[in-house]
Image 1 (cartoon, rainbow, N blue to C red):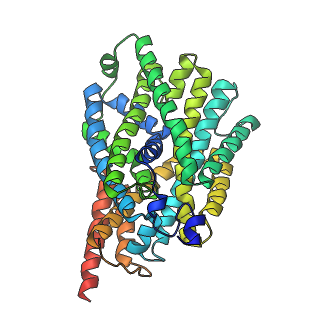
Image 2: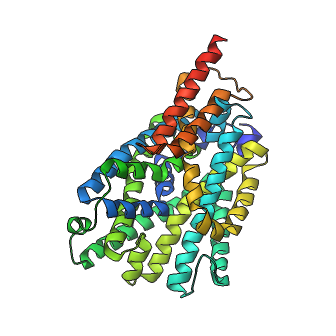
Image 3: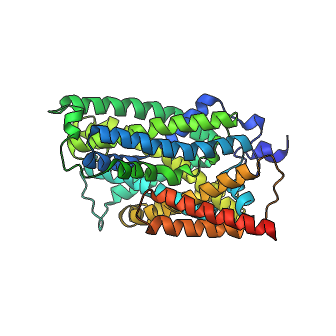
Length: 415
């Protein structure tokens, strides 16, 4: 074993070897924690407002199948190849062409890291500390909470996959159990059953549109799946762990958000627990829920920036953590809409990685400097995903990207 593999436990620029592979349980915990994303609860609120109970269930199933197929395929590729998203991109986009997807995912994940910090600090400052927080004013105690959370979450990402695994082992059972108990308590304290409560309201959202929200909630983050499944034992393990984890994790987040909305008028299980007078447990669940996603986001940003600038992943985790922490409150109030726009740019990256991998599976692949068909495919796919308001935005972008890449490959082979 080389010194590089001994010192670089995160295999930043090389495939994960047999010694670096993790147990199935560890991988399941990491992937499940990855899906515990507080912003998904906001989607649950939207689904509850626009759909009745059975419409909600069918939207979860349809959207979940699409999301699981996309992330599961990337999970297979990551585990079978042992390569990160950025190393896969070097093969499909080129050594310098890969800077585009690396920059895109690093930018979005650093942004979501900052938003996540504020999603923890602002509710705690308002609800538990009694502070007045507005887009124009944030008391110093709120900034202190952001700083403390930023330091802790950056530290877990700095120490890599081992630290991410430990956090997931702690956070996943705690969030799942406490959140489910709080949800059940909310239903039992309500004046109507779950189906009856879901029936209230305008219900003007179709199942297809609801499924689109489900897919859009995590399809961008899901593009980074190879960064984690490359530590799985095999391609099949990476596939099934990803599919099961995404179904369970996303469904729980949507349920938490939906129940919060229809019973207490909020969009987060944090608010349900506050209404049940579970103050300290509410802070614990909110913090752990955000932590599991934030450390994965920062880890992904570190890998991407390392591919572009050549410094170590740990160095870029620290730099990204500082940027995300300093900008957290501003990002929360000003940048969520822009981040959602940028989210549409990542599925085209994922589909090109998938097509290139399976078209060249088992072959010796040379890394070009720039594969322009891949670069143009991502740009065209991102434009279509953001401008065409029909069907599923992410799928529209993937179809266009796939067509551009396929056409480019045919032209290139003829020359």
